[in-house]
Length: 157
Image (cartoon, rainbow, N blue to C red; front, side, top):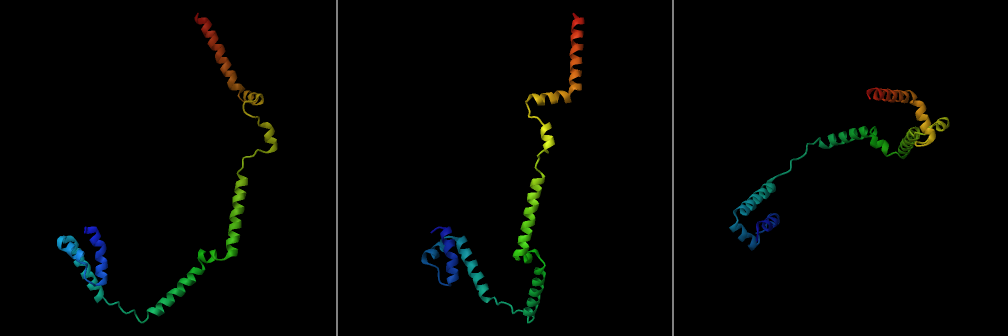
């Protein structure tokens, strides 16, 4: 018998108050650590047999009932109390749903019809013309740089 198997049977033998099996006793004779553990369990069981539960205070029941009433009064004003009320839960769920739908509809990025006509699809001729119109000053500066570069290149020859 190995130590693992012996430890599994040890607690059962201690609880039954009977003598351990012959195989278990022979293992205890060969293994000092298992024998020491068996002795410790026997001592613990003996102490538990001697232990007496203390008598409760004569006013224990009175104090317990007062404390229970106090906790019940506190619970009436907690969210758990209101969560049990179906009407309150229904109203809260409806409000949350309305807020969710309202925020969803309010955040959609749909341009107004007047703005839709002004926005052209990217890559179309209309979009290109709008881009050129917006950035005409910048593009003219680039053309001026090209003219300066041509002039400097011709004078360098």
